[in-house]
Image (cartoon, rainbow, N blue to C red; front, side, top):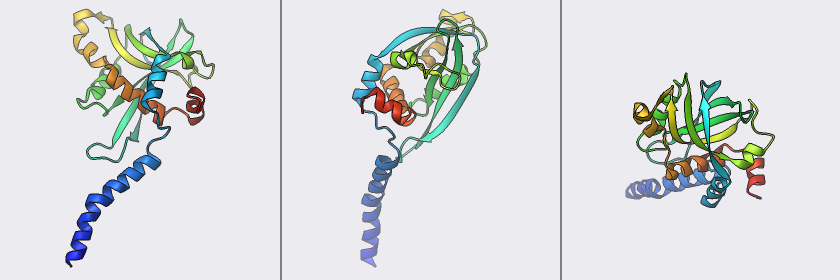
Length: 196
């Protein structure tokens, strides 16, 4: 009887973490983007300014980040718009539940209410911007948020809270892009971009 009790305890201590590690490694890593590839993606990106009067679409997708303690899932969220100057469709991407302070959920909440002149800056990968496969309504160019400059016609101190919430620091931005490259970029494009 004692042996089975110890076996059960050892199974809990060793077996469950090993199982979680195996599932994470085999099924939940996708393209397995490294820090080097995230940096390469950012190196080929430029900060650009965009003006939006309203979104032409928005959506979200829940996915399993990893088998771990605490929250296992997150959401990728997107807001689609057309840019007249570039003659392309874009998706402003952000994630919810990857930041400890729930800022992602707050960011998504107020972005859903854009209904007038809103100006923001974001990172745009130049390879994707120049790729003719991107920029259509079905396959918009990704944008990663940096700073909010104007929100529904309001500027400066009138958007202090929204500007602070919208801002994505470089560490969080790296997490967002790593998740995107690993989980959402098509494998063939990932291999082509990083010569895999």
